[in-house]
Amino acid sequence: MALVMISGLRGGVGVTSIAANLAMTIASGGHSTVVLDLSQASTLGLHFGLDPRQPVPGFDAPAAATGPIHGVRLLNAAPQAVSKDLGEGLSSGDFSFTGEVVHIADLSGADPGAAVQLRPHADLEICVLVPSAECLYHLPAALDSLPAETVFVLNRCDDTRRLGRHTASFVRELLGPRLIATIHADEAVAEAGAMMQPLARHSPASAALADIGAIAGRIALLAAPSLPVEATGIRPSRSNAA
Ligand SMILES: Nc1ncnc2c1ncn2[C@@H]1O[C@H](COP(=O)(O)OP(=O)(O)OP(=O)(O)O)[C@@H](O)[C@H]1O
Ligand SMILES: [Mg+2]
Image (cartoon, rainbow, N blue to C red):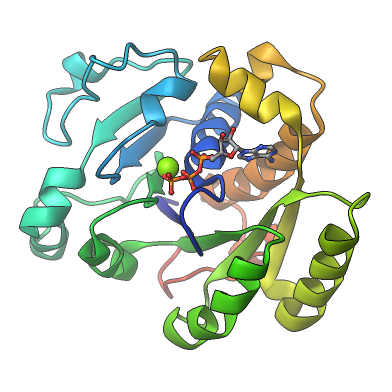
């Protein structure tokens, strides 16, 4: 198992928060985990307590310069996506996402070409949406343009709100098994961000963290080479996923 792409149906739906906390959860289970930052205006470091002036190490930085933070290595691959070096390097085999390291690619606010370059090498592509009119408005076009293997996560679910309830049931019906998870709307996510802390540290009992943990468990199963992919309940994006 190697590469999980995460993007949003729109901006601000929670991609970076999910990618960061998902990666930390997977890492806490003992898996080598990397977050690839593809964002043009990254907020990834926020979730790891990085000073905003401290750049995320480059994709080509030596391993020694990219020591794990909360168990996760952060690599900025945005420049390589813009220059197309990312796709070319992956195609030529200069770098690859094989092995047992779990790579989570944060594609929120990424160069539009980044997803195209990563997609042939991805094991799983997740699109995040929220219960909003804007997301629902864009959903048909997304379903037309995204690969059929793309799965969805509905973030900021709030069953106490009528729109939240109706959206969740509509999306469940529309997407069926392609909706792999829902994540509660949870003030703790925003609070952890404001404290520049992992959600697990700021609010270990938070509902959103439990939801993210369930997704992490399924992704971690993909990283176990001895297990058949079907055991995860997630249909892999590429045929050679193991
Ligand atoms: N489950 C949740 N419950 C409550 N707030 C959330 C949840 N998930 C994310 N948020 C909040 O939503 C805001 C946007 O989150 P985030 O930056 O992760 O989104 P993004 O999709 O990466 O945005 P961008 O497109 O700007 O990169 C943040 O303030 C975050 O705290
Ligand atoms: Mg983001």
